[in-house]
Image (cartoon, rainbow, N blue to C red; front, side):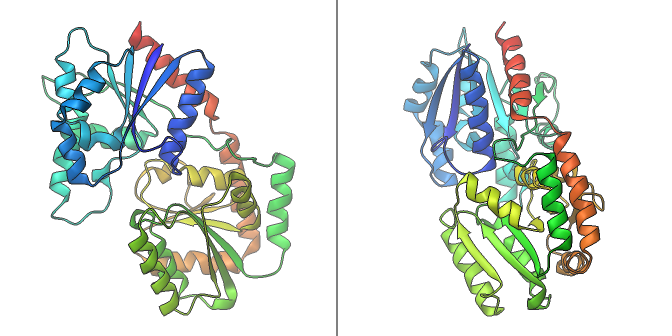
Length: 367
């Protein structure tokens, strides 16, 4: 197959969504397909909306020699009108959207949400099919896209992300890690992994931790501070105001090997974000770590609250603090949750499985 993939910026961008796209591209190319990457520059949301008026963009997509055009749904503000023009071409290639999560599912100022919903709905109605990263994401798309006599049924494939891109431990090594966490002394070592942006909810976690005795915990933060420098600065102020500089370490971006070492050293992953799926939760479980996750979004498809972690309302600092306090004082419970987390990882599809499902879906469309 000849496949196009439309993204913002670089395919090497550090995020779960771009990792998903990279693993898919790798699989397609290894299977003998050609994949042409079409990159649009990162700009503001209003500037992306203006892309719809660009004849250059329309002609660039119109003239692609591909059998099918994949579009990362992140690009939706640039494509809502462009896609309508592409659909009028005869013959034309199918347009397939890769949906990690919807922008309109995130927390936004109330005045902006109607705009985001309108633009995103318009985009979702222009594509011929979908690649969903979870059932939760599929449900969100179905609800926003709606139904009408002019719309085809919601077609697509659910292909879950995986975590075997990291050097994960085997079963024996994972059990050794879990045992060491149970018997080892010292404070509860909490790990946060994610770009430092408001949606990831690190400020909520810091608020909850500020209620705990400082001797009981340490927090390691792995993630890019440059994505939203103003938010990163606000986090540093929050840490300083609470007097937590000695408890919280900001590591910035790290390599996969360094990230794996962070997972090995931690007792618990805590990321209170809205996620369409949440690859970091599965990564942590590969190392036998329980997960503290936000209750909204796709985390509930991985985290079974009370079994391999807990789902919390991100803004409820008291609830989060209660779970952290309980786990800090009960290492046997921590180990039991960790074993269940590792079992959850072991039962999950690998990248090759999910990418093969996507390729089969695309091949059926092209044929």
